[in-house]
Image (cartoon, rainbow, N blue to C red):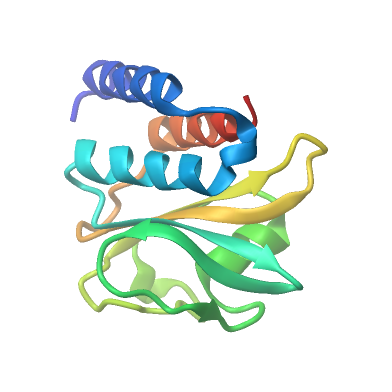
Length: 153
């Protein structure tokens, strides 16, 4: 997809999510809404969901796609890499990522966005997989980070 078109699409998605999200006290409902919109509006998203840090473990939150691991092995995989590095991780080919956790063999590329609370502490991640190699780029990164910030409005 052309960059301008992709930015425009993300702007429309952002505006839609912004209109749907309610008070930050409805955190889980808001996460479910974000996942539903993203998964249905971006056809290259194969699996879209949140993993939340609960008592030092990474536990599945709202998601859409094939069945996922409920708890991810500590310090393994792309989600934990995003948390441990304290930054977004884009993986062009999951087969080449050391320790990748494959919930579905059709997943080929992945992006993980750390989910930070207003104090800047990581409380989980937004995890998105695609069936296409090298699917995610800086445009996805920019908009997905912006979209996760809507959880605190």
